[in-house]
Length: 217
Image 1 (cartoon, helix red, strand yellow):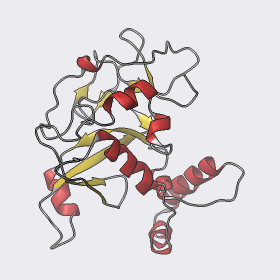
Image 2 (cartoon, rainbow, N blue to C red; image 1 turned 90 degrees about the horizontal axis):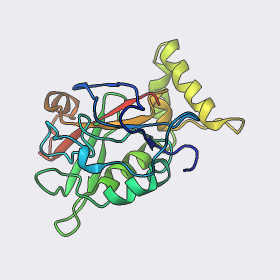
Image 3 (cartoon, rainbow, N blue to C red; image 1 turned 90 degrees about the vertical axis):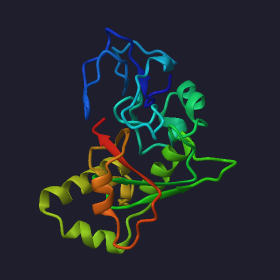
């Protein structure tokens, strides 16, 4: 498996991780591989438990997903190949297919909207791609003005993230740097109260809105 891919650690070979809805053991989950990791190429998809969010595919829901990957990279490169292609064309919705979906987060200020159709509903791959494409856009002047209003610590986190991503090349800030070191996708959830408070007055279109969760790699 190529360096940088998410990897599956079977039971007995992984640390217990605290997710938003309690401890995630005993189910396996995805972590960045280490030299000591016993790496497998394909996860046991059937082991994913039932999500408390019925309208979210259980492979996307934060309380049940087996996936944790680096959103700086294209999803078909960052996610284990066999896992990606087995799940990418599955409907993102749980009980119903979705034709419009908004993605928001407490870790960034933007709203990304995905459109599908009755004949081609929104898929898991659409969700992953929307996050990557949206977060890999350059930061614009108005967004930089917001960064400048942050305190020194928060602004420093964004600048350090940009420097680490750019390496020795010319510094170019992107939206992904807004996340600081929280660049790992760990799932989505439905938070109606936050979604309503986050919505621009008069801008609620009644469509499905999901809150995206991130963590450090």
